[in-house]
Length: 76
Image (cartoon, rainbow, N blue to C red; front, side):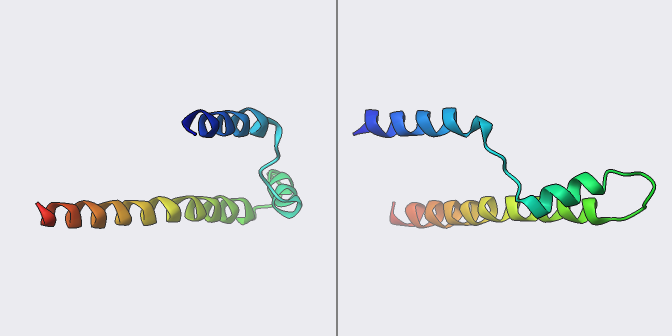
């Protein structure tokens, strides 16, 4: 079973290299905001939103790990 899981993880990491990670609207906003003539903050807002969405799962995982660790130590 472990070999199967390792094989699936390998296939996922190998095949996802060519995928586009942005939706069409996000890509267009990022490309058009690159123009230095118009001083808009759409690109900064897009990057802030991406960082926010990136950080939430890690925070949830960290809180879960802390709770699990504290509950495990109480049992000893």
